[in-house]
Image (cartoon, rainbow, N blue to C red; front, side):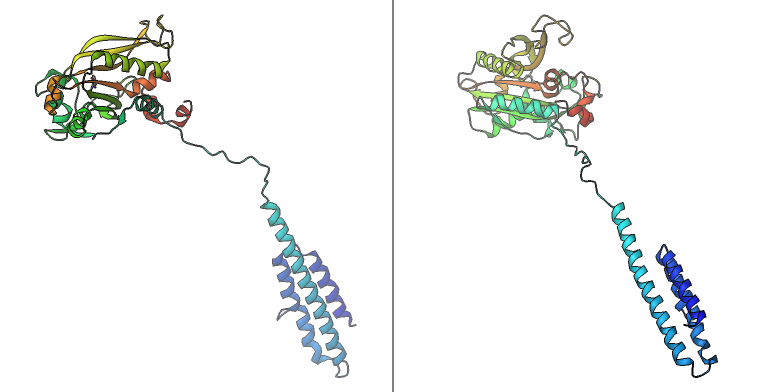
Length: 339
Ligand code: DAH
């Protein structure tokens, strides 16, 4: 074989074998087999040869071209394979690595406490009802024996919407809705959101929750109220809990009382939880005022009722020993997860 051809062949093979990537391999192809490539120019020199040498020279050029061409192809395949291997190695998934932790939400302490309250009362045959958060002045005040100019209206800083519509300041209005619409006897609790123009601090919020309770039937007495609420307190805070009723005043009940429970932390000895008192106030209650029954077309001579109102946040804070109300409204999952 012609020396020039042999040199081109040997150099080409060496360069191909040394190629490390597709683009340099492509440069080699262009430099040798391209229009202005080495082998192409050698082919062009064919016409300078004596005619008898041309066929064998032409044949040799073709052999060399085929060989280089094949070498380029096989190198290309090899480089592609290597590139794929590198890619696969980089994309390897280590199935033994620990997975990303899924974070779950958590039930709010208010909700857990409400679940308990509902369980206790439905267990005693109570129905759970709901009332509107946007309420008429009539249901929030008037029908509960709190007429215009009544001092109790000032005590509860009300968010008014119009002159006679407001955001309810208490769930007690649901008593009136229920007495207007439900057949007697009534045994219901009504949990819900209430609103007061208070600043948020450790023990107040402009928006909190109450659970109202109402029983209306024949021969209902204060003894029924006491017995029912004592059972409630024991189920909620433990069988050793004792209760105490202190006279109080609510316009819509007569007589009225506040109920205290023995501190479940110290059992009544006095501690930080009960501020040394041994007792903790948990709800307001009383016998439904005859006038309130009358306004709902119920004859107080035939029917009597008792009612109570519990602050849900207060229950949750006592039960779960939460000392700052802010925590109940921030919904930090790290806090919520503790209950
Ligand atoms: N509505 C009262 C309040 O917001 C709580 C209350 C007291 C409700 C006595 C009652 C009750 O049903 O009988 O302070």
